Image 1 (spheres, helix red, strand yellow):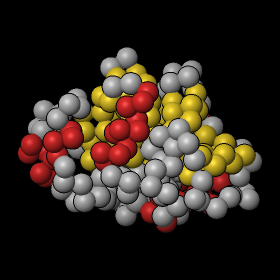
Image 2: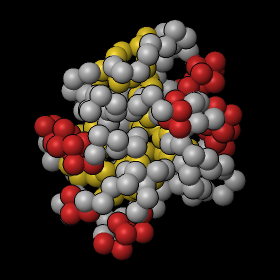
Image 3: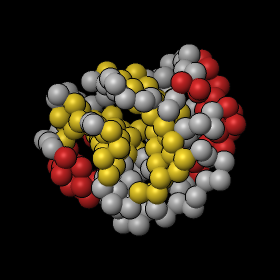
Length: 213
């Protein structure tokens, strides 16, 4: 699988724009391209896509982690150029009238053969789980339900291999010891601490970063 960070608080690839928020493109063999979250600004989202040579119309699905603006702000502009996507939203998020098909997620859900939702956790957020040959890759928006709760929910699908996304004020660093890869993005407050503790498994994020797994 391939994950391309499109929107983040920091820039990895020169020429892209950074901004508060998060979005990434998830590409998995024999699966529709999935846009995970949409950042805050639609213009920045679409501009970064253009510079990364990502055609919005090539995306088949959108996965929204939670309803906060820094993860949904770009959605309306995205739907103006691609309204034929299927959108997965946590059940606490109000329905989207402009979308072709909206699926509200409450419980754990199998989306595709190797793609799952943890279900909405703590009444606010869902995370994406992708099964790979190396193990599970968990993609989180802000980890509002807590990293421990997210990893526990994901583990019902197998052994977690990697954690990618925003971790907010997460400090329970020992929860990462059994993972093989960590890419802390967006709202993560203690990136340097995680990197210092786990230098061999830590990957820098930023808009334009491509992670091949």
